[in-house]
Every structure is written in C-alpha cells, then in structure tokens.
Length: 237
Image (cartoon, rainbow, N blue to C red; front, side, top):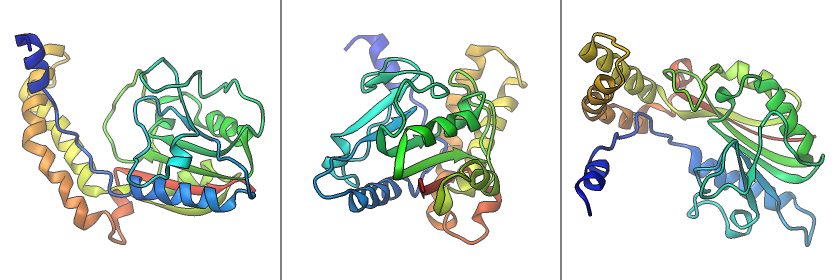
C-alpha cells in the first residue's frame, strides 16, 4: 500500500450521527411488504436516492434485497437506475415497495419527489422514508430543507400513515452541531477548504462520542423536539 493510500485510510471522519432505528425499521417495512403481497407475487422495491447504501442483510430478507432497484442521480457501484427523483422514468404502479433514505432534503422540490414516488407505487404498496430535522448544512451536491414531524406527516398526507418516529435523536443533533461549531472556532469560521478539512478532522474525533448518548435518549418522549432525523412508514391506499 502506497503512502497516499495509507493516508486516505487514516484520514477518516467518524460519522456525527447514530441512526438507532433504520435497520430495524427497514426490516419491519420488508416484512409488512411481504405479508401484503398476493400469493406467488414477487416483491419489487425501488430505493430512491439509495445508490450508495445497500439494504442491511441482517434485517431485510433476501427476497426483498434481491428485488430492490437502487436509483440515484449519478452512477454508483450499486445503482441500477440513474435518474432524477423529480422525474422518475417509470410507469405508474411499477413497484410495491419504495424506500427513500436521507434524500428529500437534497432535491429542490420534495413535494414533487414524493408525488413521483406515490405515482410509481402500486395501491397497497409500502413506503419507508427518513428525513433530517436538526442537522447542519450538508450539500450532496445541494441541501434545501429540513422537516419537523408534523411537516413530514403533511408531506406524506396522500399515504396512509402507519408510524412516524425518531431515527436519529437529540444527541446526534448536538454531536453534529458541536462538530461544525468547533470546526468554525478552530478556523475562525473561514471558508478555506484545507483549513476546514484539517479542523473538522480534529473536531470530529473530539465530538463523535456524543452521538452514542442516543442509545439512551432517542427513544424518550421529548426526543422529537430536537431529533436529528425522523422516519415515516406508510402504505398507499
């Protein structure tokens, strides 16, 4: 291994958030999907914007993982469809399962994206979505909005809600804000890219343990008041 490759391996930032619910929720989504299928029908799932995150094998049955298509705005190692979430090149009712993880904040019209997901989902089909609430700006390549729990319910009002909840709690929210604030202090809130990268590396390793407090706080009744992210689980009527 060359020195440059070794440096890249060592120069890793620990993630600022701890998603305490996603894997189990995806397993629940998959189970509900399979239970709702008519006898003999094969599941067909579309993961919108999920081109860099395969479904967790431990929680999601192989029958669902093997029939999941990954759609992303650009080609990735696992993407099977390259397209814009605002204009899905798919016929109505193409899928009986839809997933969207941390994508809706990155499109300029989240209502249109949800309308497209509604269009390509079959009646009775399942949908699972995760969105940010208290998170710092993170462009990929753009970052447009955040969602409260009430805002998330409004966004998915054309679906029958099964559950809305916290998937990344207040400790993750504080961890991310603390990291970015410390980065700003270390650089004098400069926009210099190299200075910010070096400062964030330091800040990340100092602040990341905070997120693990979500193992205690994410499930508490008032966690939604400053959660880092929410999830929506529902069904198309």
